[in-house]
Image (cartoon, rainbow, N blue to C red; front, top):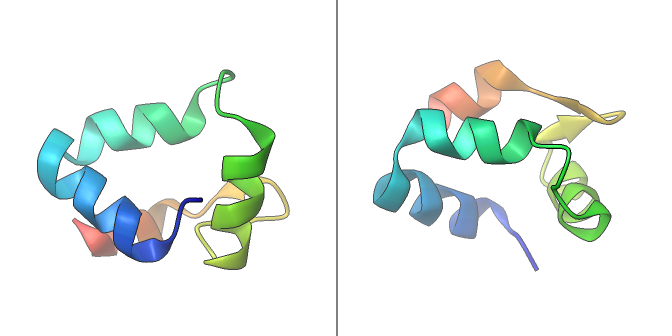
Length: 56
């Protein structure tokens, strides 16, 4: 399960741009997208880039 904290750790470990590429990937599992929708990383299926950048 992806949470806001796990996304912050991913950004710290891998960097902001690779994390954004992962989030925009067609291969991103639906369950991950749904988990992150609850965290407001996605809104109606669209990535909230400004919020993601604020985490970096």
